[in-house]
Length: 251
Ligand code: NAI
Image (cartoon, rainbow, N blue to C red; front, top):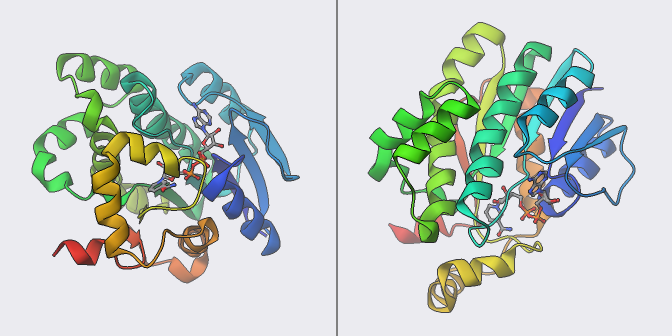
């Protein structure tokens, strides 16, 4: 079986990915700041804003990792510092650090969002941020190019899509590691309620009217599991919407 590292494993989409991967015979090593509710093959409790904790965790991981699912995330109701570090800079740092321990043919899957779909409007900024090689370079760049609190969630999901797309080919060519994103629309998880405070009741109602319903978290987990599997061995650099068609209604 494969060995997968799953962040955000203690809730929502991450917990479902762990459940599904275990069911299919994978060994799952979870990462989260909270204790998981299911039994895993390994669990590392850490805060993904803490790069020293990330480095320590990566040192403790075995070589021969087949997949990294970067699922942990915080909503835009959290501080900009937290959103930038958990949803983007810490995710990047973990991915870069784990890369030397990954097998040829391994996969990294990042959870972006339908709220990252306007990335082309800020492409130059996102490319500039993507070119900041280290966590600290990213922090410094963001100090010089501040992001408004109201749109920071969208901003760092956009940045994640651009970074993933930009790194995808080189990582596949040089390491045999595929890098992809899934972009969920609204999902029934504990953070769904935070999107109402983030986007406003009106916007959320507008989206609700365009949708049959929010996703169940296992419907997103299935696509993440597919991207980790050998069935997706030629899928690289994609950002796959998993939103029941919501994005298609913005045409
Ligand atoms: P969730 O709140 O159920 O799970 C998030 C997990 O990340 C939690 O277990 C939490 O402890 C962990 N986490 C948060 N900050 C952390 C930190 N600093 N260090 C370590 N772990 C941390 O949320 P959900 O919905 O499962 O979210 C997963 C991903 O899906 C997130 O990246 C989110 O932005 C994204 N997403 C969610 C949508 C939704 O409607 N629920 C829609 C689109 C994207």
